[in-house]
Image (cartoon, rainbow, N blue to C red; front, top):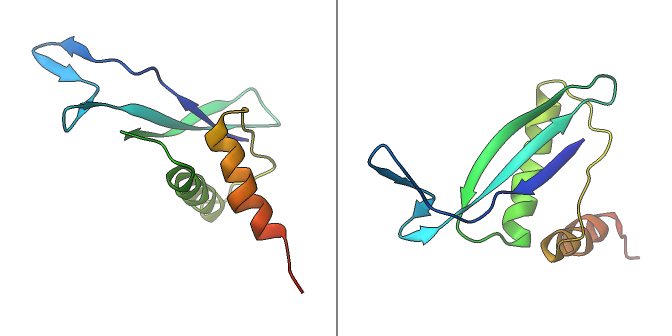
Length: 103
């Protein structure tokens, strides 16, 4: 299973450094998690800071994650999405269109 999650938008100050800003803008982090269906194992395989998430960006992240996982020998069984508008757009504009054939 691959799942994406968003961290909250906030800025933190620690040890004289400010975290959570990119070019002066508060960032979000997209986390890609894999979960085994045969064991309780769950691992975050990528943490990607982004300023603004878009369906195109998220689709590219997801597609590259799937490609990388299958290249190293993982078998992808499912992808889960919540009902966020970005996720609905990915399903409508990328996944369903890829499966639709016109004659």
